[in-house]
Image 1 (cartoon, one colour):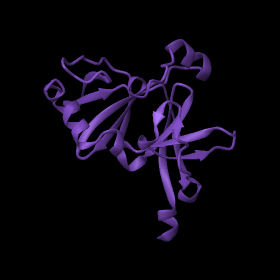
Image 2 (cartoon, rainbow, N blue to C red):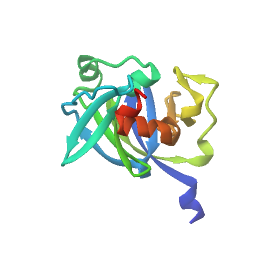
Image 3 (cartoon, one colour):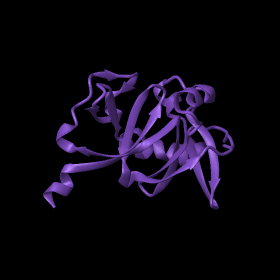
Image 4 (cartoon, helix red, strand yellow):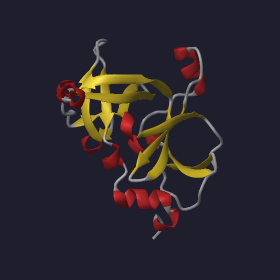
Amino acid sequence: MAEENKMLQLVTFRLGEELYGVDIMDVKEIVRVQNVRPIPNAPYYVEGIINLRAEIIPIINLHKRFHIRMQHVEEVEDDLGEDDGGFIILNIEDNKIGIIIDHVARVIPVDRTDIKPPPQMFSGIGTEYIEGVVRQQDESYLIILDIRKIFSAGELQKIIDPQMASA
């Protein structure tokens, strides 16, 4: 049991040039790109909503939220041989929210002892949104996002009820 708690399963994905991860327990599913309908008065980083199996899900653009350059489809195709961007549907406080990703990587186990605190400023993202970083074998870093801090209770209310954003 102690060994089980030592490992964290992460769904990893790319946003721009960086590799990010979120706890697999917070991920409902990964879906291909769909048409997103804009919603009025939403925060600037809310792209709109999608209808996924009769469920309305707000779609968040973390590129805008974190000021990350979004890869163009052609760049993703060149780098990976195919366009595999889409949305990761997260379940946060019983609310489903989709985030736009450039590329789904894979699910990886991470030893909790390998997670280090983030530097003061990492890739333009405030450290308050980062749970930690893990150095990869290729000398790059995996940035573990803390989705509960990215989507606080007040933030969730603005996303779920966009009329609150203009109040």
